[in-house]
Length: 503
Image 1 (cartoon, rainbow, N blue to C red):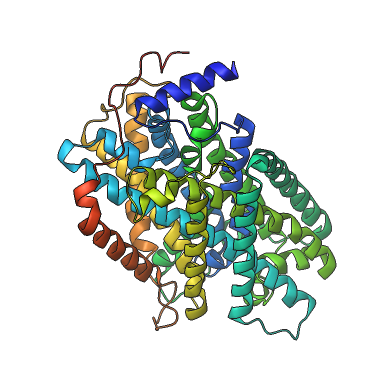
Image 2: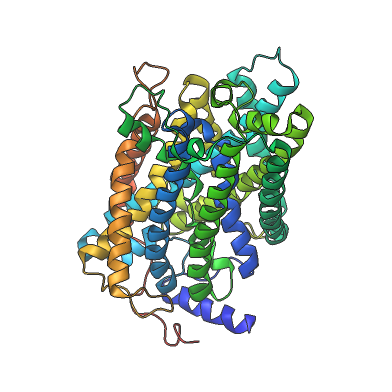
């Protein structure tokens, strides 16, 4: 059966203009493990509590996640239709090309590809930053006299990036096993930490009113704007589900299994993330101490719940390892995205970055590019006090914009551009999901570019705007020099191969 699926998948890939170059090493469980490791919702949400605790408080933490979760489920459902019809590692930029008007194919595909590449590289930086922040928090808890310096965290950040590169480059055949382990570790860690903190903190819980209704605004923005800015935490926790698309050429049964994995990982992430955040708020104690703690909000909550630094640090190891897994899996996906876009001539030196290493069986040059740009991203952290928010905002905004492009083009053409496929939403549900998706992305794209607090200074401004400007400048120069003459979008055949969509 697996061999039949692989033959079917290779035929469908060939119909879209690409020869299969990557081995289909990933089972459905392995890919679900990778997708969930990328989202890593409960750990990403708890590690980024500092975003929403001062920008809406508990109401932003809980209801912001619910809002982001519902909207991202709509986005995932919309994109799942594209994934079922065109299961290619190019993902969004490929989907835009096959449904666009002929004269707009090249430019829309180019823009979508660059935005998606930028989002994935920024997401690698985000996970390395969250991991390094937890490690610095552990040091602060163990040594109260320690004064963390930004360059200390930067060095840890670089170390985590290089570790992820080495594992990706040298242990490619073991990655499916690693991601299955990551999925089990994440679910197990979620259960262990939740039960432990509830048991240790009993009966010293915060009130239900505090958990679900308490509002805090320390941003300087009006209350409504502050709450919406707090959506960034929830958005981070349930985004990046397109990892399934960029790894789709490495699993059997791609057109049927891929959409299921995409939907399920968002659902699991929202569910586990909401429960874990509610548990943390119940056991958090004095929220002012949590917000101002040098150890960071998550570790301070664990210290309060367990009444022990050692016990809290032991519990923190569970989400910390999850974040390391996430950094590893996001780098895997980012390198595949760069490989796919370079394969179609979308990047400078595309032939170089589209090479698959003959012995390692992976796009090593794309992996090197990912690691190098991530380290450059880290330089923003050295120069800005709001770099934490800026890097996270950059990843969420870029990925959301890449999701919006194929959805918007499909809507403008009446949602009738996709061929027959195994995953198909009823027409009314498809329109509903698309409209909610586009409204959410439009709102958050503007809001997440705002500075996290007022008054704005040179060190606390949101440098996400600057990062985007640099990416736009590079992409425009590359388009003028090379893209407009040579880039025609992905190599596609609009007529799917015979029998591709049949079981």
